[in-house]
Image (cartoon, rainbow, N blue to C red):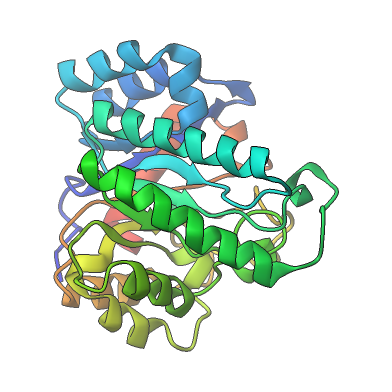
Length: 292
Ligand code: ZN
């Protein structure tokens, strides 16, 4: 297992972590500059932030600073209530692949979606099996396109509390079943984003990380699980402040040969997004050394 205690060369910042500074929106160009000033070598940007600044602007900044990406957030949201919705999702996901390629991302992260309409407050139906079959079909179709663009797809299993509105793939096992069906040759074109926030509780976690192996382990996201958690989406903790044994999970991932970035992904309306972003970055660096 790599020693992270001496430096932060394997730290990546998911740009949502400092999308707000003291409660105010921080535009992506400023996020990039702040990371560069702290000697951070990699980021994982969000599509809405890239769109707000303009893809050419961000692409140029990434290249000028020699930044690496640890992923691109995100594609997915495959299920829909009708054919038009499915087509719209397909087209949007293809654009996400193109953007990821333009930015030089190593993978496009997929948050696959749940019951159509649920995220907007009213689910169109209650058939989660249908949603899961649309997810499977959507990934299959996108995979053909992504292979042409040489852009690996990373399915991110989300904690089951998000099954209705964000992702109906909720365990590593479920995600790997899709990978094995659609990419039986383990070509590297389809794999998993392991986010400790979503999977730390899973009794099969170690076993499924081993099943994934190096070819399928495309990204590693860290933050912590607070007790109590006060918000289902935006109360992620700083590494070391909660109950996740992050070094143990990183050890399992690295035992398979994963040697990529450890990406800090914190959504925190009540705490970290209220602080100056420099302080949040300094804390990420310190905890990367001591708690990851
Ligand atoms: Zn994540």
